[in-house]
Amino acid sequence: MRKSAPRLFERFRQAHGDYSLELGGLGLGLAIVKDLAELHGGTVTAFSEGPGTGAKFTVRLPLAAVTQQAR
Image (cartoon, rainbow, N blue to C red):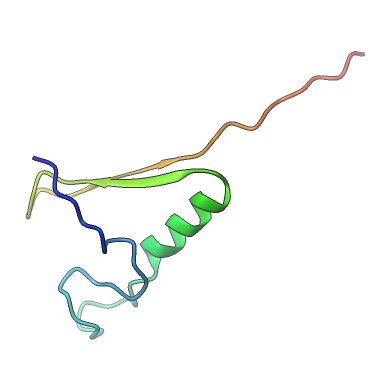
């Protein structure tokens, strides 16, 4: 089962839904990862089977063109 979490990558968003620091962190990590990936022409996606099953985050970045100079 794939569930959408549209707010997952929002700044200051924490899993428990409020803005307290009860669980630590400011909720910036995933937002920063998303911004950096997009700045490089990439994407970030998240997948989870549901509560208590963990999550898989995938960062995709384009390959840079490599050129070799003739010697």
